[in-house]
Amino acid sequence: MDIETLYRQKLKSADIACDVLEDKQNLILGMGVAMPPKLLSTIAEKLQSDVFTELNLYYMHGSKVLSETLLTPELAPKIRARSLFMSGYDRAALKRLPDRSSMEFVPSTFHQVGRLLTEQIDPHCFMVTVSPMDKHGYFSLGTNADYGASVIRKAHNIVVEVNENMPRTFGECSVHISEVDAVIEYYTPLTEIPSHAPSETDIAIAGLIAARINDGDTLQMGVGGVPSAVLGLLKNHQNLGLHSELFCPAMVELIQSGVINGKMKSWMQHKHIFTLALGDKAMYDFMDDNPSIVGYPASWVNNPSIIRKNNNMVSVNAAIEVDLSGQINAEQIAGQPFSGTGGQLDFVRGAYASRGGRSFIALNSTAKKGTISRIVPCLEGGAVTDTRMDTHFVVTEYGCVNLKGLSLSQRAKALISISHPDFRDELARAAYLQGLNI
Image (cartoon, rainbow, N blue to C red; front, side, top):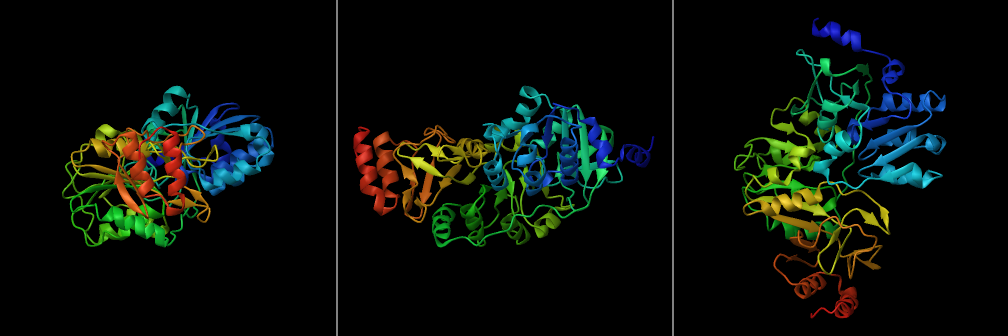
């Protein structure tokens, strides 16, 4: 059977395509940009009409459409949503839900998510947005290899939503028409994440980090104002490489200008490695059919044993708070999930294991308009994203300290030195009560 005939046979309406999903099954959704809006709205309709009475939902970084379709108060009794990384839309939806048990958080480091969703959790159905099929019969996962490239090989049923705006990317992003059970077509603009100008504090922190990035380094940049600001300060660098969980708009200019070219990488030279992309239309257009932009599953991109293969690997990520021993919380505020474990620990460990590698954890010294210190005596709530043994450089607007090799007392002294001056005496007293000599 030729490819076009096979495509026509599998092309369905959204209503019929969703029939591969059965009541009370586990539905896994593509992440972020790859969440399929038409399929989500159709499933919501089927829940409202009691075609489905209950579904278990697994995903990372929920989209606006997800919050407006499945994560609504009306459908809360029928949905058990389990997020492995919370977005702003997820947090807003959680506040609206009448029963907090309708949405739960699943801790997992990113490089293990694909395994969790195919081994610990039975993947009954996977739904995802893909690019149009090419002449060889392949769709592309485009912006989202992440766990999608793992789940799509092992899910019992696969439904793809074709969107002409999804870029065609290379690497391990290709899915053949023979591998899917149903296809629908729905063309709509992709989710865009607006860029915000960095604050003066972000720029100050970014400057301290950029000064420690050398020509020829390979970069991983996390989410947030500081990582983006760091990229903005690297325009005069040369021969940088990219092996990053996230691909973002600030990287495009550096690639176009030749600053990021990958020629000095010791692993996969000249290729810009990513596992997920969040940005704007201009970035998606840049990615489309660009052979230098290659996406691989997070199980590979975020695996510390792979990350370390690039010499001089530099990881830059943000945090919510750090305690005096160097433990990092990047996922929880006031005891409640804010984002997720994500891939921060993957890269903290992988970068330090790299020859000449460094990892930086960046945070403003205070929160809530200067009323709360983000360097704290002890983390509250039990969320430790990076252990104190793993933390390397910690950076605030007041300085950059290297915690490797320091005793607990030395760590406390170093971290207090980069805390906001208004809180240094208080932190020193807390250190004293912990029996530390500062």
